[in-house]
Length: 150
Image (tube, rainbow, N blue to C red; front, side, top):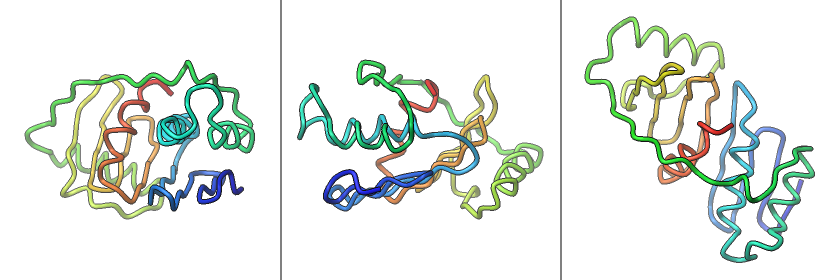
């Protein structure tokens, strides 16, 4: 669905040519995280009263979400020093379930209360088994602010 001249929203992600951003989610529902990203991207242009691309995406996905809910959490993460075979196998098992091939070898792995968080150059595999794939490495920080909330 076209939500803005250059923003296209689809079932499991969005593509925005204005900001040159594309994000897809596999393995679970990450649409609220995507909504938060869309809101954050377009807030400066539209202002807090009515962010049209955010409202359009909400309607397309059938999600009720108030803009006041969009508040990121800064989480302090420390990467594990050594990735054991057991950890590697668990992570590889998660990616095989999703039927994707991502570069886990060069990614940062973090141990959280919920499980393992893997952050690569262009992906995040969260402990819930959701894989966020994106085209800009800078999006990782933005996504990490919201994955703990939803």
